Each structure stands twice: as structure tokens, then as C-alpha cells.
Length: 251
Image (cartoon, rainbow, N blue to C red):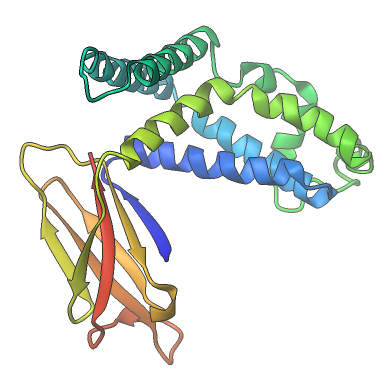
């Protein structure tokens, strides 16, 4: 099944972007080629760009504190393991403390002159070759192990930001059960329960259907239009298609 995740607000959209970039960075760091490490640096700079948002750190801290208060309310519940609960609360507190104490996210990377030079050149199409940036070309010729010794600590400076985001998103994803529905004539729409703040839609669709879901939503409802590629190479509504979808509304 192919999974699509659709955020209902910009805060969750930002969290998803950070997650995806962190996942990509983790994969690229493990590979040995200089080209992979080139794109690892590019991904690192994308994370820095998002992490530099002035309100992002405070949003994450608020979400961590809100989640902590929610789980503190579970203390004394006989249906919940006290040991597991205390371990999770301790993890929340650890993430909160690490993010609060780290100062400006990625500040040490921003102050690194070599990284700053590479970052400015990567913003120029074709601007990072040896005739423009010989020091970067020299770095690319080093052994994979030496490049990874540089990349790993650079990536780790973003952990205070990325770990709590991953934690918050894992909790959000596990907040609801999946349900199956039938999309008729290539479309499906459902009203959202009032009084509940939904954050994200998760939608699964079978790959053999060759359908692409176009998702839209607001606080009142969400809608899915199933598109398929036409003979002109463009996507069109699959108005003759009937398809089973599986989705989760995360709040």
C-alpha cells in the first residue's frame, strides 16, 4: 500500500518536512559516494533553513509541554503500565530540556565558514564545482570515512530539534484507528466531527490501482479526488473508478 500524509495546518506541514528531510539525511550519511554526501549537505542546509524559523522552537516546546500534561493525567490509571508511562514522560522532559538549552538551532553550523561558503555556492545552479569552490572539491576527494566524520557531528547538532518532532509525530500517528471506505466515481468526501481538532490525514491506496489521490481539507471536512494519467500525459479525474481506501484521522 502507498501511504499519503496530508497535514491540516502549517505546523504539522513543517513537522512533516523536517521528518522527511531527516530521514533522507540519515540514508545519505550511510552511503559512501561523494555524490551522496553532496546531497547530504544539501539536505542539511534545507533542515537549517526550516529550523531557522523564529517561532518553530517555541511551537515544539509548547507541543511537548501539552503532551506531557496529557500523559501526567494518566498516572494512577490501572490500565496503563506505570513504568512505561514514567519512561515516556522522562523522554518528553529530556526532549524539552535539550531543545530549550540548545540555543539557536544550528548556530554552530551557521558560524562554520567552510559550510557557509558551500551553502552559498549550492544555492547557485552548478556553483559547487572545483573551478568555483576548490576547497569543497578537495573535501569530496577524501575517503568516505573522513567525510562521514565531518557529516555525522554536523547532523547531530540538529538532534535537539529533530528528536522531539519525531516523537510528537509518532504520538500523533498512533492517536486513531484506520478505517476503510469506498470511493465512488473517483471521489470520496467525509465531514469531520465538530469539537475535535484534527491535525493530519493518513491515506493508503493500493499501488496496482495506479491512482494518485488529490487531497484537500479544512476544519469541516476532507475530500479525496482520485486521478489517473491520461493519453495526453496529464492527470485527470478517474470518474469511472471505484476504489477501496484506508485512512486515519489523527488528532
